[in-house]
Amino acid sequence: MQAGAILLARMLGEDSGNRLPVVAKMGEVRFKRIVHPGDTLLLEIKFKKKAAAIYLFHAKITIDSKTVAQFDITCALTDKPE
Image 1 (tube, rainbow, N blue to C red):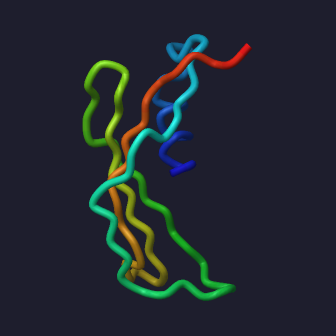
Image 2: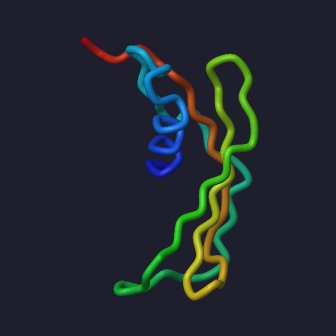
């Protein structure tokens, strides 16, 4: 989820203004394999669509090219706390 928020911040760049991306929802969560200490995870985040200040991403996590988890993430832009 943090990788998705980082991607959104980079997509917006200077256009983010005084707004902060936060995770609003997760969906279609699938766990396919067990992750063990010492495993090297590859995180793949893809932007799917935007509606107003809501952004939808798909995340896929793999180990040695085998999917261990995948899910959809919805991020919203909120005002940064003062």
